[in-house]
Image: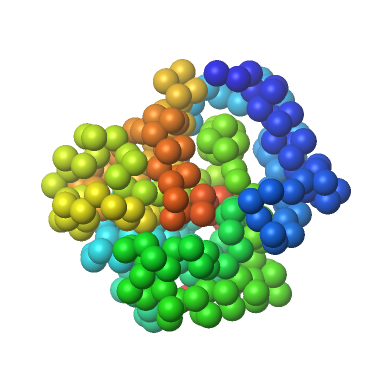
Length: 277
């Protein structure tokens, strides 16, 4: 395990480089967005090593997805409930999206509609054309391509913070340990633990195919002693799951995910700013 001091230094060094224009991701041709996510104590001062607990668990309610494609919407619902927004259900989220091919950028626009503060991390700005031959994407990719690219192009003017870079499990753990953030991550279900696949509810949605299958989960806890993350999986019948940092990394960095992650602040929005549906 790295010391917390080294982890913070690493995180803030990347932020400084991105703000100064020095940080680049060689796998991307797009220019990186400036980083705006920072950690602070309750009185607004920068975090120090002694400020970070060894473990943290955010009380996030668990909601199951209703079909094979709405796991992301179930994750959004969990985040909304955690943020104190109770006047919504998964059907209303479906109505807002009005599509059944959900990308991470669609989830970002939903969070924006509800005035939730977040940052969107991805290694690809837009729809990756190499995914057109992937079984998981191919049926709707031609229809999604223009729509998804347009959402990315309009994100900045819509106030959506997209950062074109990878975010490590170490960085994620720091934000979770602060007690101020949860995250929605795109993963490959079959890169998760073997015990994961034995869950009856999960099998109902993904069948027996072991090819890449995109799936959204909520990351809401971390224990540095065991190096495990606590997650909520909308396809699981169990409310809470623990997953090792290594397993999460493999699932998040699988080809097809673009390492997409929505880092969500738990700071409550003003009632008048929240969307009523």
